[in-house]
Amino acid sequence: MRREKLIACLVGAAASVAGAQDFGDRDSGTTIRDDATVSAGIVAFAGGQWDVINADGYAEVPISAFDNQMFVDIGTIQTDSGSGAMVQAAWSEVPLPNARFVEFTFKTANGAQFVPFNSKIDGDTIQAYSYEVGGDGNGIDFRHWVSEVKWEELTISYSFDGGQTVFSDPTIFDPPEGDPWDGTDDNHLGLAFPGDGVNWIRASYGIDVVPAPGSLLVLMGGGVAALRRRR
Image 1 (spheres, rainbow, N blue to C red):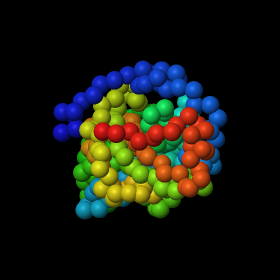
Image 2 (tube, helix red, strand yellow):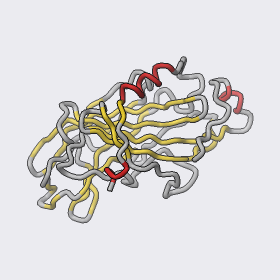
Image 3 (tube, helix red, strand yellow):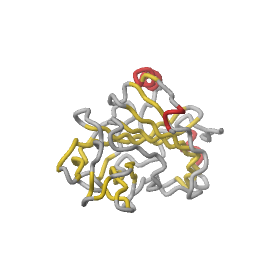
Image 4 (tube, rainbow, N blue to C red):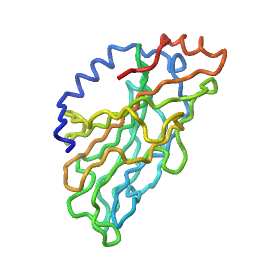
């Protein structure tokens, strides 16, 4: 079970580390376009299929700075019981000295859990729920000089208190779809369950970027020469 791999930590401490990083101008060292948007949604498995359950469906979410995440409403949870909690989403690129991540965060606006126990869709009980990024094909828009992106690892974290304390699934090092990565993920590798109390989910993708020929200096200009985070 996920909770057998319990990692308790304070997000405030993580924010302190992030605050210590001088990210500077996002044009320097970032690989994702400043005007990039990604479709994001919460999905549930019921009646043998996955369905988007936030009211806005695959909602367009613009990228924001890591140290100033801007959450946007993507609709309330819709089940047979009616409208539930409002879901908010944000995502950012995190360029660190020896690694690079793309992080997607989902949370409820009022702190309620995403999916209450015994929730149903068209009479079918929801057995599990997860998130999708680019589920409708609208994935991450990387800069023109990026030749290829490899998904190196994925860590999915959960919280009962809006991200103040966090527990995580074991890190996934081998993406099921291999390389290169198209900036989408509808694999539902992180599963949560109705009534579990989860009200915050973060998916952190460690990526390796391959610049187009002649573009290496652009990437190095941001202070990142080696991006691969090894196991």
